[in-house]
Amino acid sequence: MTPDSGERDWYAKAGVRRDPRRLLRDELHTGQLYFPPALVPYGGHPLVRALPAGTQEALAARHLFQYLGFTTHFETQVVNRATHRIATGGSGVDSTAGTRLDAFRIYCDEGYHALYSFDVIRQISDASGIEPVPYDFTPFRERLDSIGSKALPGQPVLAQLLQVVVFETLVTAILNDVPKDGRVLGVVRQIVRDHARDEGWHHAFFSGFFRELWAQQPPSQRVRVARCLPGLIRSSLLPDLRPVRAALAIAGLSAAQVEDVVRDSYPRAESERGMRAAARHALRLFEETGVLAVDGARDAFHAAGLLTGSKGDGS
Ligand SMILES: [Fe+2]
Ligand SMILES: [Fe+2]
Image (tube, rainbow, N blue to C red; front, side, top):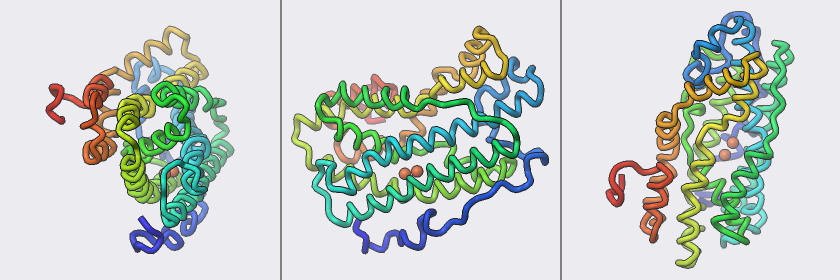
């Protein structure tokens, strides 16, 4: 994609250029929800329903804060780590000046997504009196980085680029469903809608960038890249239960009750189904570019639960 391709006028259409600051209206006491109930898997569990109403409300608010806090860290520490490499010509992939200029635009977009995610946590926390649970992003990032360093030893930049290709081509239920849910706080729906608009364009950019990256890899490297991707997708998409456990414990559940709620609310088959649905565009990209045709790749994607049906049937 070149800056003059006309596919998107960033200066007029990017959220950071166009959207106003989104503000919490006087909605906290009108029954509006923090998050769609279907996206809070433990919200309907009997042990959670037995908690006082105010505690259940705090759990829902903290689920939203967790999503926004994760976004704040992820955009700045993971997406922009790799986007900075592309923008400054240090990615190891031979890119045009147009691609680098677009990467600088994405860098601005992601910084703005982090800014308003943090802004809305603060606005809602100040108005509701519900404090976010302290969140340490480091274990998540280290787990992601360890997958790359095992599959691509000595090539941390390539692993970081692949992390971002995977994340930026995922289709999450949150970006799709939150803006449409009229029960949710307006400010939350607005920022998720703003974010989803930018991400549609990022998806196109990173799909194109991956095609360039893949075309430039020698055959031996392609095998390593193809075998690295399933682990990256899994670690990106399976629910991170550490903050869920922390929020349930703060709500007053015992350690045994926390484990009961987590086990009942995140059945493995459901998590795996959600992972495949969110990864469907990434999987199509890897099918189209020939990643799945590399020796051993289809088996690795099967073993990671990303392809269903019998091996070799392409489903
Ligand atoms: Fe973003
Ligand atoms: Fe993005």
